[in-house]
Length: 125
Image (cartoon, rainbow, N blue to C red; front, top):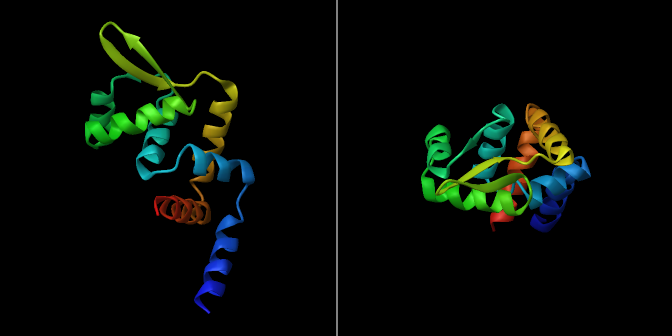
């Protein structure tokens, strides 16, 4: 019976735009990344260090740094050197920015958030 319930839950949670689901599972696959995506969406012209972004996000710098590096590796952010500092900014690629906007706007919907949370937690296993 429990397997049948999990299958039903999985099917219900998979009922999401496939492109948004892929973006969630491959790029925004943690709650910290979700916070960072929202931060950069709200401040698209920001270029800053991990330390300052951590301060704005209210998170530890090492956690933020790890997630920023991954988002840069995945093309959501750009990592560059400014003087002796590593700084991060939103990727300039229009496709990435469009997907980011779709994701953030979809996140305004409670049903989408529930499904997104389900997929993030499931991916943490």
